[in-house]
Length: 301
Image (cartoon, rainbow, N blue to C red):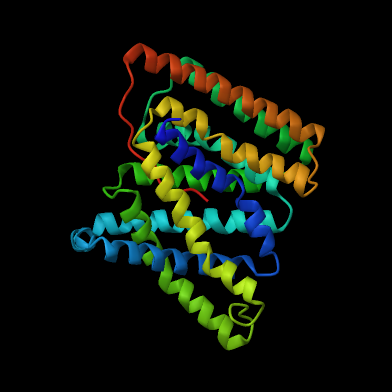
C-alpha cells in the first residue's frame, strides 16, 4: 500500500479512537485535560525541534507581529475546539462530535466564501444547501441547534482557514500555538495545585501517565498526517478524512451506547448526501483541470 495512504490512515484512525482515550480520563476535568494536552504537546514538540536544531524560524516570527497575531487567533480556536471535544466526549455526546467533523469540510468551503470571497460552483451551492437543511431539521425537531457540532465545525474550519494563510508549516505552527497556550495552561494547573484540585501526581499512576501522554496523542497523528499528506492528492485526502468521524460514530453507538435517533439519522443522512455531492463535484472539477499539489493542513482534535 502507498506510504502516504498508510501514514494518513494511521493519523485518522488515531483521531477516530481518541474518544476512548478521553473516556478513560472522565474523572479529570476537561480544563485540566486541555491544559495537560497543551503543556505536554509543547514539551514534546520543543524536544523534537531541539533535537533537529530547528528553532531558526522562531526569530523571524517574533519580528512579524501580524504572524504572531494570526497564531494567537489559531491557538484560541484550537483550544476552543479541543475543550469542546473533550467536554462532549466526557458527557456522552460522541455522536455530535462525529457530526461536527462530518460538517467540517462544508463549513470550510462556506468560510472561504464569506471571508476569502471565493466563488461557489453550482453543485457546491447544492451541497451546502442540503447540509444547511440537515442542521435546520435537527434544530427544529430537537428545539435547539446542534451547538457541539457547530462549535467543532466552525472552530476547526476557522482554524484551518487561518492556517491556510499563515506562513508556517504544520510542526512549527503547532509548536507556536502550544507555546502561546502553554503559559495560561501552566497558570491554571498551578491554580489547581494551590486549591488542592489537581489530579496530576495526586491520583493513580495510570491517570498521571495518561495525562502526560496527551502530548503524544496530539503530536503523533499530526506528524503522520503531515508526512502522508505530502504524498497524496487532495482527492484521496478528501476521501480518507471521513475515516475519523466514521470511527467516532461507531464508537459512540456500539461502545458507549449513545442512541442514533430517527432525527439524528435523518440529519446525518442529509450531511452525508451533501458530502457526496460536494466530493463528486470536487472530483469532477479536479479531473477537468488536472490534479493540484497539496499543502498539508493543520492538526485536528
